[in-house]
Image (tube, rainbow, N blue to C red):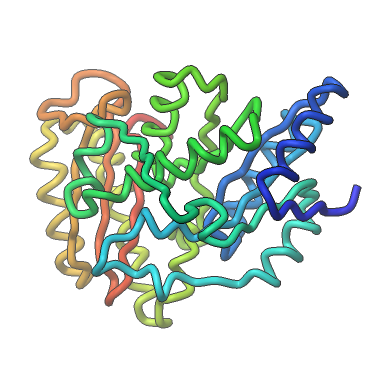
Length: 284
């Protein structure tokens, strides 16, 4: 099947109705474009579950604050289309802003507790934008599954909660982080890094790996692991936005790590580019 471009909500609805009549199931991969191997891993996981895979590309203005990088967020639509065809995406939706947010738009979705910590501290409107656009995509495509990368772990938790709380009937599937050979988590923003910044950014992965190793050796005080990580990031020249160890289910900070389910999350600026990463402390 060739790649089908869906341009209007009415076109999506008619395709969704026809799909349901055929008894075929849909998996959705929401993205902001500038696709890389991490996104393609989401497509691969979607193809393993569903007869039809839809991918959306939309740089969502509601996710960006007034001082953030909306205007410089990388865009490469022609290359993204080529990658979608190669990866076997069936449906592609790349709307203009007015298609999702027409004049008079005034309805937003908020996931209260999970949107407050971590990225929510420095990006207070970010997750309202995420929840709103994902809810709209779920309403349009009616997928059985939606694939999200674990790199944006807080986003993954929030979308799962939204789908559950609003009875949307979408199983939100988390896909492990895809990393470069040197450990850097793949991100669309990586293209904004200079060669020196690209090397500098690997410190984010190294501090996570070090924390996991120290946990494996028996360290259980979060404060110790966090202070060591902060020192390493400072020495690497990375300006920390936040770094914390939280319960994976609630995203609440942990002081003493007594059981499985603890995860370190970090956000920092490499030059002017903000990057995020995370890692479960329990694991190989």
